[in-house]
Length: 198
Image 1 (cartoon, rainbow, N blue to C red):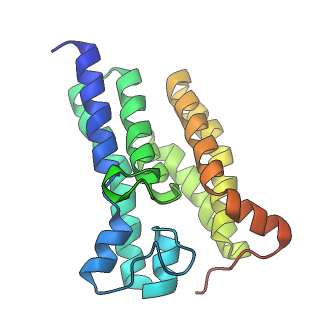
Image 2 (tube, rainbow, N blue to C red):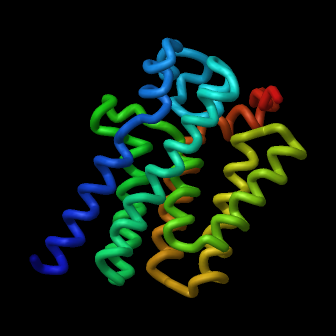
């Protein structure tokens, strides 16, 4: 199999893997309302926390995170082609945002993006995740914390890997994440964004 065909195959695998909506699966399994029709309407851990509590939210968070990490690690076990490794991470992230199995109505990408980042650089994900956690503790605004953390992520990735391909891909993912958070950004500007209930 050619390297191009292998890269395409991994990209398709990453997208399909990322397209499995953890929030919807967990809520269905636990008899909770579909997160796409409750709360914020977002199938992500923060909304599952609001409608189902901490345990379903934690399961969703872990599942979304692994959707980003596993495709990257599997790809890295097969090839050291940085373009393929970057592409499969982006594909898994895109699958989470626009899942083919769930009408292209996906989450906003925070946990899956962090999962991809772990597959690329454990230190970069520690710094990015730490930034998110610190801001979440200070502000209790999940969206603001995520937006700030992902704004810093390309810099953390450059510092830890010096890979132009990975940093460029992370920058694209950050732009996609900002687009998916556009309603949150509007709420933040208007002072209407809901805080995390701890």
